Image 1 (tube, rainbow, N blue to C red):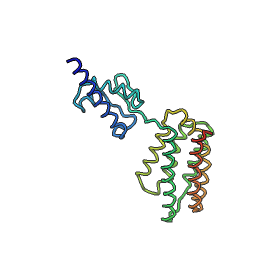
Image 2 (cartoon, rainbow, N blue to C red):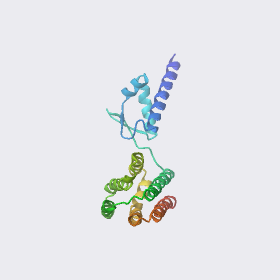
Image 3 (spheres, one colour):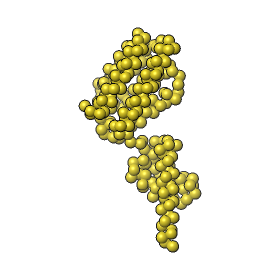
Image 4 (tube, rainbow, N blue to C red):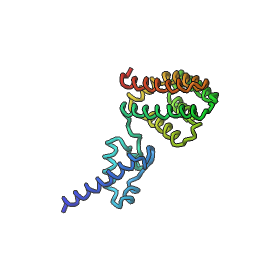
Length: 221
């Protein structure tokens, strides 16, 4: 009988583990959200013990952090260098397509606000304030994309950058920090080309920027 109980407990632990993990990976429960043993036990119709064991497994995998008297907090999923490069490829497609859209629609861009924001970014880099820089960079790129009026793209770009900036991967964090001055140089050139409506060179500059960021990830220079 004891063996049967242990087997049933193991099965319920697996049910809880798979259910929680699926919700985390699908972003149904996004990073920073808190979940409790009681909530999950009620959701699955099981006791809290298998949920507690599932929490321990998920914490060991780096998906949650167990907090005393608070349950568990969903953490940002880890991104390796391959994942970083994959995200750069997606961002390149979005920005190149956006510049092409500006050209097709003959939209004239007032870059005054973008220039101001870029100058602030330069100051933050000079001061070594990477945290404020990253927040301001997300705003800069959202403002750059604003004329497309595509909320999904704005959210995707912002969330992708936020996810990268919140990584605890020391190698990736250092890579992003080293690349900040490089990105600003290219941002400045892209705005110059947009200002004179040379969209072809603006798109080329975006591709050059992304290519250099990828190379720095591969070569770790």
